Length: 392
Image 1 (cartoon, rainbow, N blue to C red):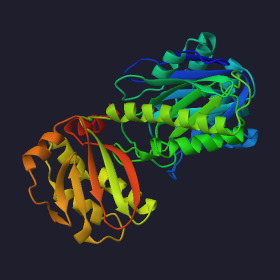
Image 2 (image 1 turned 45 degrees about the horizontal axis):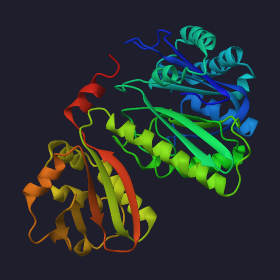
Image 3 (image 1 turned 90 degrees about the horizontal axis):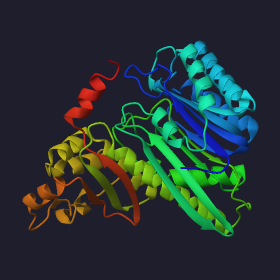
Image 4 (image 1 turned 60 degrees about the horizontal axis):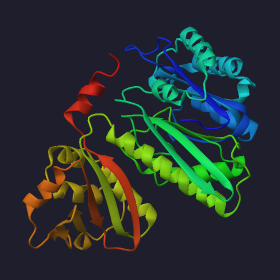
């Protein structure tokens, strides 16, 4: 996977206890338009704070991205902030440009000092390995508990330009939408101004990554960045910008779906579709509550159509509702009508739907026309095992 204007690398620097690639670089041939969204968690990792500052200072112009996995460099105090700056300086030396033109990202265990000597050596090695064909190595280097890399690509015609987008993502746990989720990176050869790229990125994140929940926890390190080299030219404007936003949204939706399918211990991916709400905000609140309810998630894991748990979650969402107007479907099976079990409800049919790997739970609040969707999953024994043993 190539994108004009960029080179990539991923190397093993000995940061991950289990081994494998753990330092990645994206190098632009010259400063490029860049946009990013970061975690909404108030406890932010040092690289998140530094990267946000770099983007603001450069007004959306970056030269590269440096990532390490195996250590989050979060909750590490002044030493962690210094280590993030060291990573930026090392990336500038390896890529070119200034330290302030680098986006820095880290992922892994929180609260442990970053082995900065190994990271710096890895950045130098990655710099020597940079290649237009190195995207797969970069995508591999950002992983933690993932079962494998998650990549996607799109090519679209926008006016006179033929534009390519390539993206990768990581994450399997500690995932809930709040500005951005996990570490995700997109490179494109589109010619687009930083302000327009930032607007497109925010629009594309909302129905994709911000509508994704594995376990309800927003990480300290979440970063989603988009870099545009401009090599495809000419500059996008008007309808072409809308077309680019649509292509970016499609790409991020692909990555988000791959991410939740690879969620820790996930066996069932469920779309929570909330309809009939008084506002989109109310619909989203209900959808998120259903998606994060441990009782709903364990029922999904067991394939048990215990529909009372869903209604309980709706009632706990903090949204005014009329219980006598509630409706519920599991796949095509009508389960609840006007707040009570639907006439002719067949529990065996509902259970059969819940045995499938992907289906939809539709909740109708009966109070308006607004709607929201969230991509959710089950909570299994494997999830508990993985996270009970995460630091080992």
